[in-house]
Length: 233
Image (cartoon, rainbow, N blue to C red):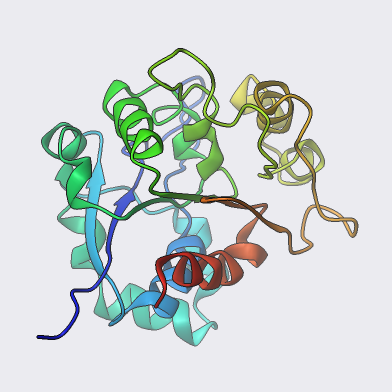
């Protein structure tokens, strides 16, 4: 009998606008398309979001990615993955069915996944089950409030990365978000945050045990490679 494929839960945002000013946001195309490209056919995916249904795709990320054949293929041929997501509450108590969870970025997670109770429960349980946890760019926002059953932050003492303050200012989101993801990741990890030496657009992927984080869209493909490696595929 053929070995079963590893099962990955992909958690997408349901937030399509910055609450304070209505600026359109969502999840970022390349940060899902590239890891999906690496793992497609090697793993089984379940897609979920806080509200279920269609998870809002950041249209700026579409405009910036259409000359990338991987992104174009994912956008054109795999749209059901984000248009028909499960509601997070439906899978929050089923972590035993998954081998990994993956959080793509886009600014949406900064407003919902950072505090979503179902997501926090999933992270608590997957951490307790010693499963793989991966996130890229703003996806690590989902990690900053996640705690173990003992009340410790799951990233405490762990090497992490994520989108930095210089990048937020560069893209004009520093005043929209209301907090520093870089600062929170550094605080909750106990000073273990680091970033690319060549600026906010440089590649940076950190693997600390079964925790995989990437700094930005440029890091998404390598996050997919590390996720595949961690799952043995």
